[in-house]
Image 1 (tube, helix red, strand yellow):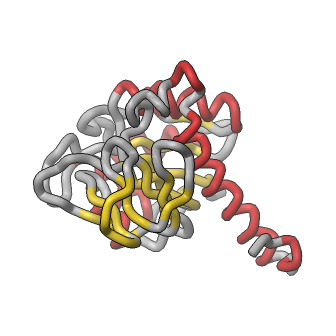
Image 2 (tube, rainbow, N blue to C red; image 1 turned 180 degrees about the vertical axis):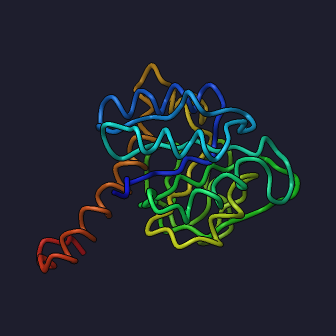
Length: 199
């Protein structure tokens, strides 16, 4: 049976703590114990973690730690994306100050105040000039996959303190809520309940 997965393109301690907290509030299983900066867990370890998860969605954190091209995090992402146990329903594309300026398209972008904006955001969560794309070191692979909802976001657990865990990481929480809302809407549409979708 396929498990619903949300990918987070960040794996540092701030991200791990934030995702662990949000999973406890919204439901789901955080694989933050397999996260790292960069990702060191193997494909097999992550797949086992997903399959053993007792609640969904399963939050998988991947991180390249600034490596250009396909780094450790993106390599793992590409490997698990096609596994029969995995159904990726969304991803948080986390901005970085990487000099290589790798980028990905996104469906929504959320700034450090929790507002939806049409532009990409930087690491601080401040809107940039690029429309519909975000720069980061672990986002390039997202464009190679069919992911229903990609939300662009600043550095998880930080963003000038606005996303601090002591406040419940509200910006990241809102981004994940967007993915869950969209997944529910897609589910309603597939069962013939299209009238329940908010437009």
